[in-house]
Amino acid sequence: VFCRAYIPGVRERTLVAVKPDGVQRRLVGQIIQRFETRGFKLVGLKMLQASEDLLAQHYASLNRKPFYPSLLRYMNSGPVVAMVWEGHNVVKSTRMLVGDTNPAEAKPGTIRGDFSIHISRNIIHASDSVEVAQAEIALWFRRSELMEWECCDHGSVYQL
Ligand code: IDP
Image (tube, rainbow, N blue to C red):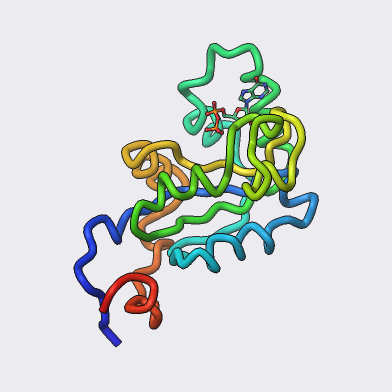
């Protein structure tokens, strides 16, 4: 059923990753549920052990920070669940759903604010701009791993 109306930005995509602590703590289901119930569309999903090379590229902009070595060890300490979510304004909305980088500053109701305490273990990654999202999706996913599909409730989430 092709029911997609023209809504500007409705094809916007962002990269989200449940970090190794989020996987260990069995939070994957609850995190996915927040994006699904909001109305966003899942277009990519996989569990992987991120390589040091992937992480070095992903966090290249932070490589002079004092916490960079421990950040890479943390992200490499176990499997992560990477996903691509699609929808109107999804990059900014996801940052709001996720909450402040530092869980101590993250509001209750956000993912970090509800499930984490310390900046060194903040359970989730989300792209911070549309341009960064495009680069991160290309880094983490092959084109063939991203699904093109129609959500049957599109007209209820957006507009018929
Ligand atoms: P973001 O993940 O909210 O986009 P960034 O500033 O890009 O935040 O930092 C990337 C990640 O690096 C954070 O999510 C967190 O895991 C880690 N990080 C950032 N600042 C610190 C810090 O001061 N101490 C330890 N880890 C940090």
